[in-house]
Length: 138
Image (tube, rainbow, N blue to C red; front, side, top):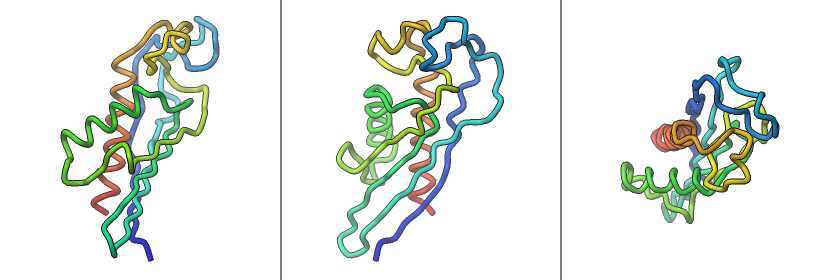
C-alpha cells in the first residue's frame, strides 16, 4: 500500500499586458485575473523502501524545460530533505490557452507574447514547488 499526500499551490501571475499563451496574436493580452490558476500536487510514497514520486498537474498550456529545470533546482536547493530530483518529479499541464505566456526559453513559443517573462516563469515554478512541499507534509 502507498502513502500519499495532496495539496495545491497558486500559480497565478498577475501581470498586466503579458500575452496569452497559444493564441498566436499580439493583441490577446492579460488585463486582469478572472480565475486563479492552481498547481495540484500528488505525492506517492512506498513505506517499505521510502521511494516517492511527485506528480503535479498545473493549469497552464504545457510544461517547458525552463519550468521543469526551475522546479528541480528550487526543490534540490531549498528543500533537499524532501528527496525530490529530476528522477521522481513528473509535471503535467491541463493545456489551457487562457494563461500568461512567456515561460519558455525557446523563441518560437514566445514570438506572440512577446518574449520571455521571468516573472511569469518564476510564478509558475514557485507555485508548483509550493504544492509539492505542502503535499509532502500532509
